[in-house]
Amino acid sequence: MGNVRCLTNKLDELETLVRYQKVYRESSIVSLTETWLTEHTPDSLISFTGFRSIRADRDTGASSKQKGGGLLLLVNNKWCNPNHATIKERICNKDIELLAVSLRPYYLPREFTVVVAIVVYIPPSAKAEVACDVLHTTIAGLQSNALDSEEFRARGKEMVDFIADYLQSIEQRPVYPAVQPGYLRPLIPESAPQGPDSYEELMKDIERVIMPGITHWQSPHFHAYFPSAQSFPSHLGDMLSGAIGCIGFSWAASPAHTELEMVMLDWLGKMLKLPEEFIFGSGGTGGGVIQGSASESTLVALLSARRKIVTQIQTKDPAAEERMIMSKLVAYTSDQSHYSVERAGLIGGIKMRKLSTDKKFNLRGETLKQALDEDKALGLIPFFLCATLGTTASCAFDNIMELGPLCNSENIWMHVDAAYAGSAFICPEFRPLLNGVEFSDSFSFDPHKWLLINFDCSAMWVKKRSDIIGAFKLKPLYLRHDHEDNELITDYRHWQIPMGSRFRSLKMWFVFRLYGVKGLQEHIRRHVALAHEFAILVRQDEQFEIIGDVVFGLVCFRIKGSNNLNERLIKEITNMRRIHIVPCQLREKFVLRFVVCAETVKSKHIQYAWQNIKEAAAKVGQMSENIRK
Image 1 (cartoon, rainbow, N blue to C red):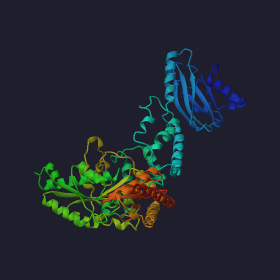
Image 2: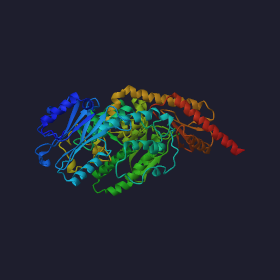
Image 3: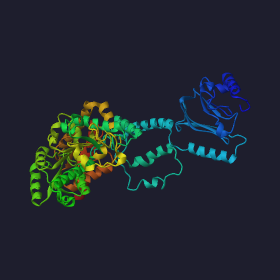
Image 4: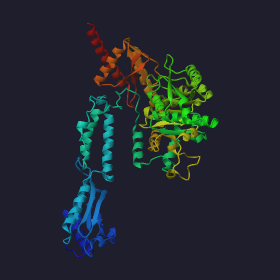
């Protein structure tokens, strides 16, 4: 078409060809050079029925052309949805004219998601080396596999399918990997690629490199540790959070981030029937925050309590040095608490005293009272207690109805850690186990363990937000804003160790709205019932015994006999790789922990787990018999 001397003549001839020549009318794409298009040419002038027009107009300044120039690509609507055509590059200067368009046709081989059409015209007067450089640079950029919106749309749908397929078929995979330490490094290059890899190769490496080393926490055969919650609504909320990509360090940084977090912690607090002092919207003095983990919550509580007691002492005695006060501070927890409590003391430079528990592994008020008397007699300053509701080893419950009033009378900050068990308190029948929380200064649990919200999401409430803000508040000029003193909002950077956080309340919002409180309660009750089903199977077999109470989804059990016998049992279960459980130590006994974890676990999976445990026990018993012989 280059010999047509004006745009009008060119378009007349093209319209005739499209209308009367089948080869043009049924073409997937038609490209034209020397179109005479400029920015003054309206789209309506180059509109052809059945085609989308994509243009690269002549730049009269850059091209030094007064006539001709410009590119046009016509995309047949029968071949490609006009909304699935994206301009990747447009160049029109004196040395090269180039139009690159990403297209997603209706019918495309599975190994491809898009095609890229490139129209190039190099004028006779062009400098060849300049044109070649531009062309090579442009094509190299187009070969990059960084996704544009259309490619992301396609790959995103593929990834959703991959995730759904993975979760749907997960129980067919061995729950525990068979790899050895260091397995992964030889499977991938020593350095990152200089140029982009293909998406297809990347996805192949998911199965080749990653999946062999995955412990499948969402498998219904996973019964170790505590649950790592997830749900499709939570995934959707997390996807949106990642796309929005805001960082929540202040209200001004993203008002919805801060305000939704405040409201979601109020919603959750009301589900738990927390005292009004812990609820923002009730006009109370406290409020809630999402931390990364229960370990973080404990550390934040400890550091807040430390700042509070130091300030109190220095207010009474201005001459008291912080260093001397710190050297006398002592905190308390039970010998059954999570190791992160002891680590919080290590990070905070605080002596953490571990107190013995009763025969049911619960910390009692009289034990704390005795420790307080002993330490005060030594001139120490008791200031913090971390009580646990639902210990990691056995799901035991410290008696906060006894501990709470004692802490209040002794000016001791009581933090209640219910990392696993806290989710169950949304059920009225389990809520009495939280009685005594009214005496606490802070309370936390992990919705990412059992409330169908994926990691990370640890909910923490404080009775007086001034205590936690006072420990962490700094006000650099670049973080100040006009509303920082407004009582209706808060700046969450004053509530946590990191300055910023992801928009984690979105996934809470999705889960709460798409399940409802009743749906979440049903999930908890179903897991508890399955744990009791497992406990019945254990009790019916005389060679096994249960250690501790079965309250929620954890059953602690063992073969009657030596610790060595039970160590061999769990090793055999692990080597079988059909189910996954982990042990714990309760007093002098080596104990196996069985936890109902996955959302999809059913009675058949409980029965399957018990069959495998019995099979492993029979093998261990036979080995022991052979040794004796």
